[in-house]
Length: 178
Image (cartoon, rainbow, N blue to C red; front, top):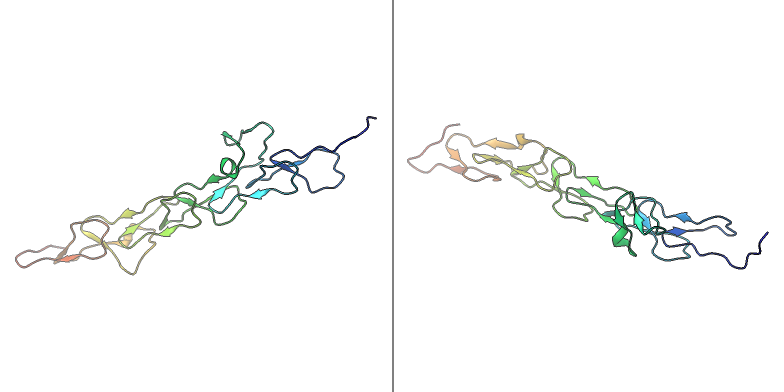
């Protein structure tokens, strides 16, 4: 048997909490990373980000995601794109915005209700759909997930623009039918 004269350092992207370890160090799990050697834990990806596993600096390349691993959280932790969010740390995915909600920015921790006069029937969207001309969205409804949120202007009223919450009265000498 050969003599052991030194203990090896855990490489970047790996960690070990065990004493008297006789085998390799562990890869950082999904949603975590490590940019330094000889570490006993991995760092969490922040809220608004996610990470894939396993993350290792052994090759300098994350084959699962096709990205260069680099030397920082930015190169491993991936921003949640528009239409998605993540409110927890150390995760491997982003949530889709629910129907009736949207998110038009990256790296978000929540989604926003569609405003009055707009709706969204799909999940994971960056924008809401506007009520069409001649219709209005009810003021007391926000976060609508259906086009039924948009109501046709009643007789004697009209609307020339989309995404409105009221209809306009027809002026003297004019009319509209329901």
